[in-house]
Image (cartoon, rainbow over all chains, first blue to last red):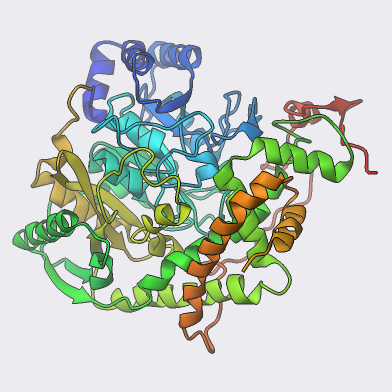
Length: 473
Length: 96
């Protein structure tokens, strides 16, 4: 069930899209991962039949794709894993969904996630946690945990997530698959239900770099409805060269600091040596503001969230409680609709933006963001890509960190600086520790997805970590 | 340091009804996170400009006309998810 796009295309040609879609739906139906919130059985089968009967030369014709539940799908329930969006059926498609449909893809369902993408473990979902295919007692990472577990568990060949502070790369790392966070602005956020606009990007998941690039090719591109969308046409699949000769790698010491599991450090350093053996060179680089990135990220993300989530008031969509007066009604709808972590972030974000604290927290964090970004600018004067662990440790246990919010935030230490700087980063499997996958992230300059895809593809072509599958799946 | 009084004020600004139990539960955790945010005070940001967005962006303009390429929703579509509606309008709670 872990078939590549090319294998699936051959099978669609020989058999039909309907047969393949039905196989995946059956697998989802008997799964214990809880990777999906909504499975669109009827829609997916009728769409597959349509592709089978009229044919399509689209890049993903007849291929099933799973979508994170914060991406708007016309006519298909979209909840952000929150009770406050109970019953919400978007009247329009996100830009990425329009692109997928044009390419002939079959959307099979909406995947589980941390509520409003706020989390690192997919445990804050109103619909219960998703489990990691590599260990049913382990978290899949988050917040796009359902999208990653679906691909790792063979329930979808491809999926989309969103990455605000690591929410694609973290679950890719924990689930042993490939996940890409593109440069800010490359994929339109039109129809992505906002958490923290200045940080987030939609990104693809796949079992291998070639498929991730193919999905990325389909969904990337300019869209006037997102004022931050960038107008650049690039063929990302053409970046897939099995050749890193001459590539200059920077290794930021700060990403191997206290709290990094020894096995993770060794595995990532071994992976860097593999690329060195293949003709790349590496050098240590200094990124001195890395240790302040996490606090800056959380202040900015919570501040933006407190503003973005003001729209959920029970008037236009979602949950509505018993009417009272104006303010009381909204306060009660929001109290009943949001979970604990979302409330915490709204409260802290509101505090950080409130009179008397705005300069101390929000403005200060934005200034620190400038310094973090300058660390990247400086590093990229001398190197082509940076390589670091995606996560400081392999997947932790369900329930292990959820009771202590700060300890959960600290898990994002290696992923959030990338969002503050807006640069692209891809997480690829590079080893295992006690049967759990380890991911390394390859970080690039703004708009230089080509270099990170090339490094990731070369690593993959010369190793076999991406071919291993969880037992019992 | 967020006091109970601060928390009540912030909850009001956020339109989030908190029970007494919620307040007891939230305050200490919010304070431990705020303590952590205090790390930022260690950074010298004298003369550093804030970064609101990573890319140099300019405004996107379009003609102000109905049914432009970025078509709007119909009234029916816009109301399709409203829990309460009346005569083609969203029905809001009373003001007072």
